[in-house]
Image 1 (tube, helix red, strand yellow):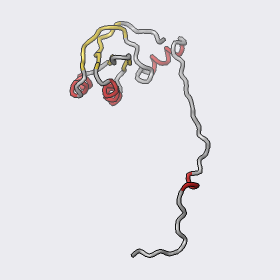
Image 2: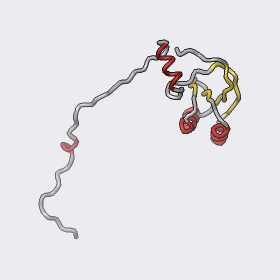
Image 3: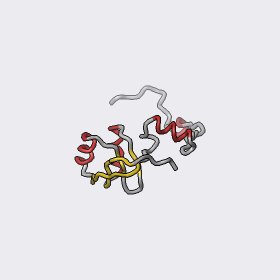
Image 4: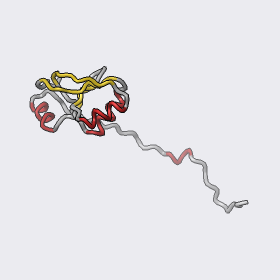
Length: 114
């Protein structure tokens, strides 16, 4: 688990969290993702956008651990250096597919446009 930081004033977002996450991502704002809410370092513009989407907003003062995707680079590097975050990548490769095998044959002769 990543280490938590000091207490911060944040915006708690509840409601459609997928919609909220898409909005937060557009603003590239640091965001902590919990199962029932997002905690966001929201400026006034992001707060207005989230409110306009009909999401529930509340100010909260608590420790903040942003998701690595949204965390500032220094935070990620610090977490990796302390061994609290492991970065992983996975690759999935499919074998080749012969998509032309099922395609109907094209006529070889000249046809009529009538």
